[in-house]
Length: 212
Picture 1 (cartoon, rainbow, N blue to C red):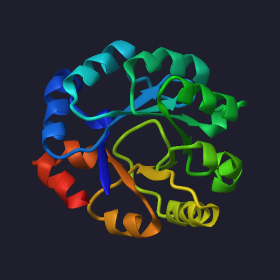
Picture 2: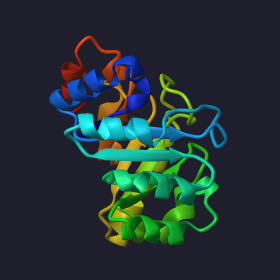
Picture 3: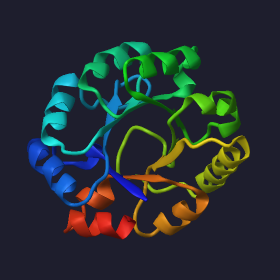
Picture 4: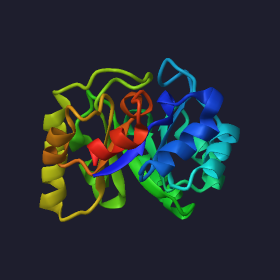
C-alpha cells in the first residue's frame, strides 16, 4: 500500500514544516488538491504554492484537478513536473486528447471519478492511463466520512484491470483511515490518499505506518 498524504488537511500556515514532516514519516507521494470554486464549492491553491510544496517535498507530487477547463490547468501545473495529474471525467469533453497531452508533457495521466460516476464510462480509456482515482467522498472538502457504497466500484475497477490485462494503479481518496484500510486493500486499492487522519494524528509517522 502506497500512502499519499493530502495537503488539504495540512496547516497552510506551516506548509513547509508539514510537507517535510510527512515525507520524513514514510509518505510515498504528496497529494495536492487543486480546486477552482466552480467544479467544486471550494478554492485551494495555485502554482506558486504548489511550487513551494515541490521544493519542500522529497517525494513526487500527485496533482488532483477538481476544476473546469482542465486543459488550462494542466498547462498551468505541468512546469512543476508532478508525477501524476488526474482530471475529472465528469468535466472533460475530450479525455483522450487530454490524456495524450499530459503524457506529452512527461507526466503520468490519471482520471478521477466522483462517487456517482460509473467505472464502465472510462473502460475505453483505461489502457491509456497510469492511474484511476476513485473519490470515496463528494469532492471539495476534507474530513468527510468514507462512503461504503464506493467499495463495489473499486472492486469492479480491479476486476476490469485483471480482465483487460492492464497495470494502472487504483487510488482512493476520502475518509481513509486505519479503520477501513484493510477492506480497501482487499478491494484492490494500491494508493491510499489520507488527509485528516494523517495530519490530525498525534504522530503522522504512526498514522502512515498504520495504513502501510
